[in-house]
Image (cartoon, rainbow, N blue to C red):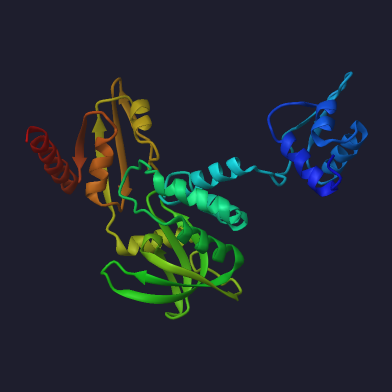
Length: 322
C-alpha cells in the first residue's frame, strides 16, 4: 500500500498519462488504496490543473484528456531516454522544424535526468548515425543545451570561437537568441569585448561556459533575432536570383523540395513548373538540392548555376563510368 500521498499522486499521474481509460477498481488495486482514496486523489490532480475525465457506470473509469494548458508530464526511464535521444539527434543538425523551442526542451530534460539515464542517452547517441541532407555542420548537443540554458536564464556566456578564416578567440557575451536557418544554428549575442552585437555560427563554438552572472536584456537594433541574422548574413554573403524549370508537376517538385524555405514552384501546365527565388546559399549546394528533387530540370539563370550544374553532372557521369 502506498501511504506517501505525493508519491501516490505521481504514480497515479503516470498511469493516467497512458492513452486508455482506467477503471476505478483497477487504479485502487494498482495503488493499494481504496476507491474513495482514488477519487480524492483524482480531485487533487484536477485542482493542480490536470484535466481528468471520469465516466459513469458500475465501475466508472478515469482518463487524462487534452486541456487548455500543458501540465507537467511524468516520464518513466525508457520514455525519458527516447525523448532525449530524439531531441539530441535533431538538435545536432539544424533541421527544418527543429528550432530554439526544441533545444530549450532538451536543456530542461537533460538538466533533470539522473546520471544513469544521461549515460544511456550518450551511449545511444554515440552508437547511431543520423542521415541528413545538405552541408549543415554537426553540433554537439551539449553545446546547444549550454547555450540555450544561458539564453533562457539571461546568463553571460563565455566560449572559444573559430572564425571563418581560422583565427581563434575567446568571447564573453550576453546571449540573446539561438536561431536555426534550416542548415545551421547561429547565436545572436552582445559581445562585451567588442561592445557590439554579433552573430556566431554555433558549429564554430567550443567550450561554452555559462558564467552565472545575470544581465539585463539589451534592445536588439533590428527588432527580432531573425531579422538581425538575416541582415548580418546578407552583408557577408552574396545573394543571387535563380530560375529553374522542372519537367514535373508543381506538386511533385514541392514534395521533392522537403524543407525548402523559398517560394513554391509555379505551375506551367501539365508536367511542367518553374521555381524562382533569391538565395545566399553556395551555388554548389543549390545545384545538389535541385538535383535531389528527382526530376529533370533546366537552369534559366544565373550562368554560374548553369556552369556548376554542368560541372557536377560531368563529374557524376565520370564517377559512374569509372
